[in-house]
Image 1 (tube, rainbow, N blue to C red):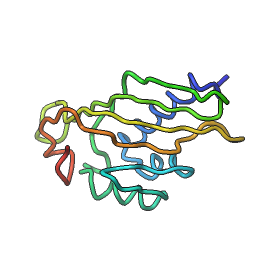
Image 2: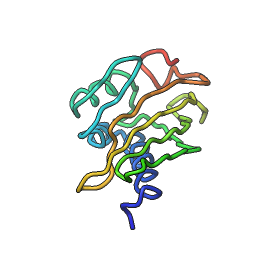
Image 3: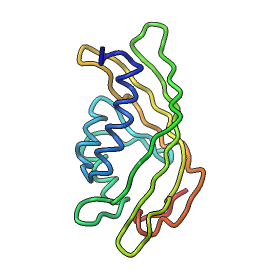
Length: 146
């Protein structure tokens, strides 16, 4: 059953990464239509605001960031009523931008909150919790990491 949290929640994690890496910032932002992002103490809600944040944050090359967001070690805790869950996971971004070798840009952690309604599971919040390790981010971001 695709609505089971052991499938639905990882699928949301990986759909976010795939859409973001494809340069589909609006599609990635759509995953938060019923929720928001938390970044550096700010709450960002709404598809337009989230898309604008990423567009002002991430360098693209012909519309794509040329990255792979690898999400690992998801620790999922489902609420007792089965209609909510949290997930702590780690992320690693690798990139092969023009003039740069394939390399690790940075690694850090997400803290996510999910809810289930009649349409299925969705993000309530994604907190960009911390950046643990930073490599050469100059070809990836328009602003400093960390």
